[in-house]
Amino acid sequence: MNDRFAHDGPLRGTVQAPPDKSLSHRAALLAAMTDEPVTITGYLDAADTNSTLAAVQALGALVERRDRSLVVRGAGLRGAAPAGVIDVGNAGTLMRLLPGWLAGQEGGSWTLDGDASIRRRPVDRIAEPLGLMGAQIEPREGRFPPFTVTGAPLSGIEYALPVASAQVKSCVLLAGLLAAGSTTVIEPRPSRDHTERMLAAAGASIARDGHRIVIAAQDELEMGALHVPGDPSSAAFHAAAAVLVPGSRIVIEGVGANWTRTGFFRILRRMGGAVAGPLEEPTGGVPAGEPVCELEISHGPLHGTVVEPDEVPLAIDELPLVALLGCFAEGETVVRGAEELRVKETDRIATVVDGLRGLGAEIEATADGFVVQGTGGLRGGTIASHGDHRLAMLGAVAGLASREGVEVDGMEAAAVSYPGFEADLAALGGR
Ligand code: S3P
Image (cartoon, rainbow, N blue to C red; front, side, top):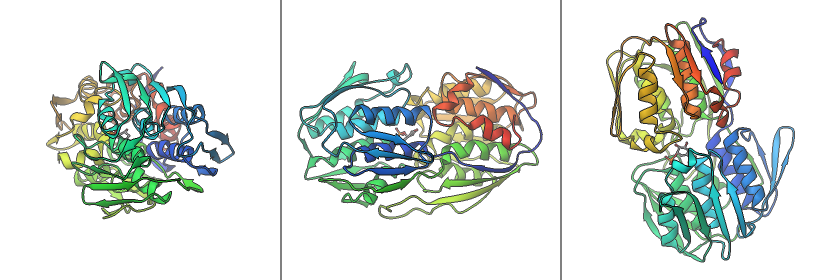
């Protein structure tokens, strides 16, 4: 599907941020691990999170869709159906978190596979710690899906993450629920902490001390009800469009304000972007909940910045937008320490650099990021999504801000995380 986006006057109005993808995956997985029914409001209805619902159903959970909520009747912490083939679709989070739950279930054996993009994404990063705990994971060529998880009695470990990955951290913490003793994960730098917060809310014994997170074995989880706030990563596209399109002023409601997810908005502010709204400050321990805020964003001039490695995990999915902002900023914008971008839905260093260059950007790839020279704008042209949802939405925003407009080849990919993206953008005035 090819869609064209071009400048059509300022963006104005109020939009509700769509439900958070990361939190929706976790909500469905943790609900499936409980014995009592869990009501989830605000669950994201998108391709990725529907893959997670299908997965938990295949493992024995019952999912009832109501008007404004989902009710999940879980299989229990040790009750997953003992065999199955799970199709994770395009969902890396599902692929990396689910094995953490399955690994400790003795006698079970499950095969996980997904689409062509998933088959290029590494899983040795979870196979290693789960193997150290006692489970068996056999990835294709030692590294990629499809792979089989064979459940076994697990022992707690102390594991220093080689990369700051919330997915790997979450996988080990979920395995820790069923592992004898306690399990410690040490992060090289903070990454999103939704799993920790949700586990704390579900009664798990989990604590953080600096970069160390410790979880103890658990008999059961208790959730009751859960609300999924709006996705800051999805809101970031509207925010970038408002900053770039002259005369714009928009309000985004219901945005998750967890500081481990709002790095992009801090970078945007540092570049001179007018972003009004309270973002959570770093917290010490493990809060048992997710803060929400309302953001007001207006057009204004930007200047270049340097995004340092410590900021990368806090803005990882929004870094393509930082590249776009850099095209319009005065001076140079540099992102470093972001080599993880190479193993996302696409190699996002290559696809962002090639894609924006095709629209007239002066941008160079580096091994671990990119360097953009601000030239005051973008010409426009055609950009391919390569099936990557965030690239499709990047192209749309680039189109609104460009001189000649942008045609996005493969716009349908947006439905992986944000099916209503085009309608929401159009409601704000962006077409
Ligand atoms: C996610 C973590 C990030 C992010 C992904 C979702 C999560 O990946 O890029 O879109 O929900 O935990 P990594 O943890 O592998 O960096």
